[in-house]
Image (cartoon, rainbow, N blue to C red; front, side):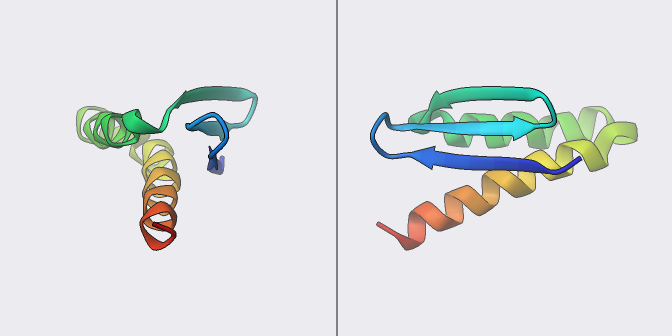
Length: 69
């Protein structure tokens, strides 16, 4: 299932969406969530592909933010 991560500059938050699950967090916590999902991939290799989608979405968002600074 594809994960998307979007940034809302007006509120300083990002939203991570996957299927019906959705969470919105402060942009300052982006690195923490990226670290969390990378650790999940290591801890639960059977679900690694699912976590890889989350990592990819967060890495893409982080790269987009760096390009637009």
